[in-house]
Each structure stands twice: as C-alpha cells, then as structure tokens.
Image 1 (cartoon, rainbow, N blue to C red):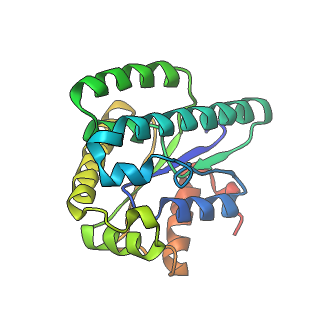
Image 2 (image 1 turned 120 degrees about the vertical axis):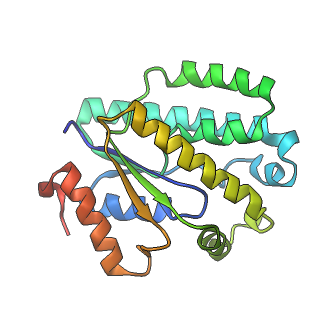
Length: 212
C-alpha cells in the first residue's frame, strides 16, 4: 500500500471523530478533523434548511478543500500517513439532500473543479447505526445547534449514506471499505470493541503499523 490515507465516514452522530482519534493515536497518523463548530451558517441551516443550505455547503466545501490541499503536501513531501474523520464525497451527500436542483447543479460544478486533483483515501472506514443509536449519541454530545435536529432528517441522511457508499464500492473496487455497526460496536466505551476494529484496520494497512 502507498502512504496510508484513511477516511472515517458515516452519518451524523455515529462516532467518526472519536474513532479517527483512536486510529491516529494507535498508528501515529496525522489526524485531520473536519471543521463543524466554526461554520457560522450551521445553526441557521438547521432552523431553515432552504434558506441557508447553499452558504452552509459552500463553507464546508472551501474549508475541506484547503485541508485536503495541506494533506496532499504532507503526504507527497513528508510521506506522512493521515486519518480523516470525513471524506470530501460527503459534501455531495449533504448538498444533494438540502439544495434545490438549480443550486445543486452549480454546486456540483464547483465541487468537480476543486476536487479534481485532491488526494483520494486508500481505505474507507464506514460507520453506520440505527436511528435510535444516532439520536442518542447526538444528544450526548450536546451541541447547541443539534438540539432540535429532526429524526426524519437523520434517517434520510443514513439512507443516503448507504446508497452512496454502495456506489463508491462499485466505482472503486481497489479501495477497501471496512464496515462497522455502531449498534454492535461501542468503540468509545468498550475497549474490546475498539481493539477489534483497530486490529481489522491493522490487517488492511499492514500489521507492522499496529502500535498498541
């Protein structure tokens, strides 16, 4: 395998950032965390999706473009392994769900231009969970702008992720996709669950990288 670049993905509340942090610590990878709380439009977005979706999605896209540009330099110049708590393809999932067709067409064009030469993860860790688990974890992390999040929105988002990850696997058969259920694995509270996931990742990227 080339320099490892792992992306942890899944719907809101599934535990992406927690697991990405564990992977970074275990394998001594650089950790790339998406910018969420810094988005000035996000609170307004959850209050009025139609009004604030384009601004919200463009903020995320531009910030992730800058982050991945920095990753590209680090991987090429320093051969530095990276784990990210997102894959930039998530932008299309959220944008398609929230934008009107005309705005989405414009957004997709901008996305294609910005991501044309971005580094592609060579391992995807896909986390999924049932609606009750997701809503419980969203409530536990206590973000103010998520307090009134509509369960129906999370359910639709989860379905979108399932559809998208299936298409991703078909389009990129050379990129391993490791699937883990958040209903089955509690990798935050349960050390055994966490160890099992980390060992599977170690198997894919090479056992010599496993440092715990």
